Length: 555
DNA sequence: TCACCTACCACCTTTGAAAGGT
DNA sequence: AACCTTTCAAAGGTGGTAGGTG
Image (tube, rainbow, N blue to C red; front, side):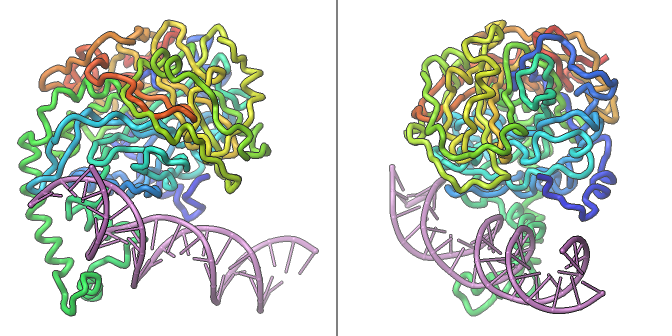
């Protein structure tokens, strides 16, 4: 559902559209597995091609403010919303075509951080990636007209550090850096992924990168949250606020005024910025490789000025990675419309599966955890019509066992259950080319059942500076590029020193309900997205079509 | 000892049903 | 009867904090 209601949000969003705010091509064509028999997105109308879709981050300026300070997102066991919330304005869709919008959050690198001396510093190697989950927009699937009518908000997406989370929240590790991504999938006439012409694109807004924490580390971030989040109004400045602060601290006197804090923070921020700019967070060549194994995108943009960007090399304007592609061999099963009326009860406690096969075999076993909980799928009837389930799957193009029909008949999953859904054979996805895919479980807020898969990132893609493009959209890209090579086990990310690589992420984890969390891979074993230097403008924006034979690239 | 996590708190916004008016 | 507006209580989202954990 579009969180933004009539409230002139649409207009507002439109006014916010700006070249720099559009998504950047993501050199990761193999994140979502979508089967397709043709190399070209289906569609009879010219503007129906998914590459024509443009996405602009809403409240980009606010995001930038946070980004400059080093965005932090609280994660709790019960789940915490993101703030700023992830909202986008989409344009360029075919008004009549149905699309599915979903997001996921992938590790930005393979480091663990600590906030020391008022700045974020690498504190070691990242912990195994959490189970990958997708948050499918509640309105999905919906027509392009619907999506373009107003802002598309993912504000109800919640983050948790509970590895056994049964609510479908996105699971993250504390003190790690992450990058949210937006995926737009074109649903076929039956609203089901899996159609041979399904295409999708991925958008990444680097300013939305953040470090997950269980309690705020940077006071500036705390202040920004308080000042901008309506729910934190109670902590806002003013003398009253100061009094509240003191009250909260059990003191009879103001501890410190917000203004004072603000000034102090400003000064400290300057210091921090300087430090960061100096490379406090930078200089982590692993950036490239780190992206390799994450089910995400090659988060590679970094701005030396940005605390978080130090790991997200971005040499250009607040870019966004925009990545469109079609992938063959992978299917997204989406039965939203058809499933809206279906009960989401626990018809299926969990999907049995062989972790070894689905994860290790299909997904190159990214490092992860075996969640004991997964073996005890949470099930509840308390699901709203707005909530649905989405879970990943893989399927060989040959239809390995699970036919579409069968999938279509598969019982819908309770949104509270999907989280525990494990790659079940029938829903599993396989790549025709043998490219490992990274399936995701998703939080599908619609009463729908979705099976998603995320293929390994293709290795080759071309890109170019947004600056040159002005407005980044797939339309600016040409097809016919890189064929996603089976990155599989190959490349160990060998980041290009000093480069702002946009290596693609390797799908890391695939959770199945009922399967315990367990390491899937050796982080170091993840293929690096070639040696492309992100610094090279030509690699700034990559996108493409997978093996389907159609690849998009800048012209 | 320390870094990190959890549960709880008071305050606030959001939401949606109920009541009332047109 | 249908629709719109207003009211209000419940639900849920905040950051702060004390205490717990490893």
